[in-house]
Image (tube, rainbow over all chains, first blue to last red; front, side, top):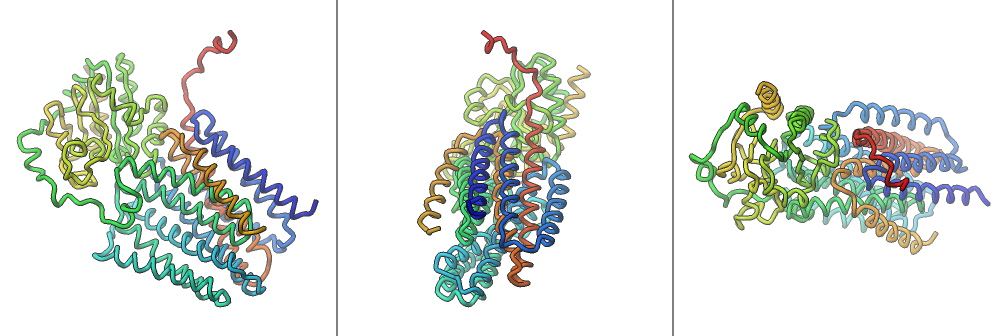
Length: 460
Length: 102
């Protein structure tokens, strides 16, 4: 067996470990082991690559591996669970950038050695554009999620983006037609970087889960395209697996918002311009309540459902909510959490926060499971969620969120909404739920309000 | 390796990925995303070859930058996923084993 065969066999084992690992990640009980199996696959892949005889300068590699591992571990250990979407976006961007650099380096090498064929140049062009868009798009998503970037672009940005996409395709064609000149490839990387930036800039808040999932998919596709440049089976397979999983998450998120991924990327968020006036919806119908009153209602409740939203993450209220759930349970009340698929800023964001607060994942109900149970629920507590519980999605065909599946919390006996003010959610529309006869508004910071309720419960 | 074989691998892996992931419960969406994100850092092995072949300074430096970025992606991704999944462990005592023994 030659050394090359040995490496290929190592890659086959690594690919199998990735597949077993991903399979494990799909069930709560096996997820942790799955992740470790994936990591083992990666370690094996790196080790067998290092025996490749083309590699001569090990110092450079050791330096890169050490620096990268140190930065990666520090970032991963320090991040707060509420900031997880940012970190995933950042890692995504690094993966995309790495793919571009690898494809660029091996394309330059192939040109130098006169070994460029159409397959290599096409794959290099594909990597350049997918990877560059993934890189800058992820960095913009990272900055937006950290709230350090508030720019929403300029009017006509979607037209500019369409033009940039066309220019990218033209440059990609030039890479294939005139592979001897590597400038075409670098120009493509530059234009792709601007495109990634401008595509994500206008996208905000509640659309983020779709964008993060899509960027995740693209980082996989970029790795796969790099595999075509290098003729590397492991890159092709692993990248395709990640690309497919990201696409599925994108699809789940899009369905949960009743918007297609393309419309999130290339059209403006539906605006409330034609919508209803907030004063008309709310006037005279809002009933404000106090923590004491909420505690009294909760004391006699048999079943309580808590609906968390992005506001929970902003207020860092997950531990307070967990404490509330425990004191209610001590009182004999059944407590569940109803989670909308796009609550938060990335798929599964709420679940991670509640897990951090030591809430058993079996108490977290998906939308389809939770909805039929609200009619038998005494109290629903909506905490930092808005659009995902807005009944206009079902009742008003002109609403920007018309058709979006929502949590039907209005079916419960009493709905307590904890919210800073009556300000609209991401969709910019008033929420008739707040004016409903069975709804009570508890105004204030999520964490402060929940803590006050716990205190009132203890004193009662 | 021919293009056709590469494309075959790609398409089959996409179908496999769809099969593997389509039934993941929403609770695991975030760890799945960060875990699969770490796997997409597989581009690291390409980076190692680019940085290590000593072809010329440009490719070595491009490769080195790629090694650093991809390693952050890989190591950070697996570590943070593990950190999240640790929290998902149920703290309830396990059910009695009587069922399996009977």
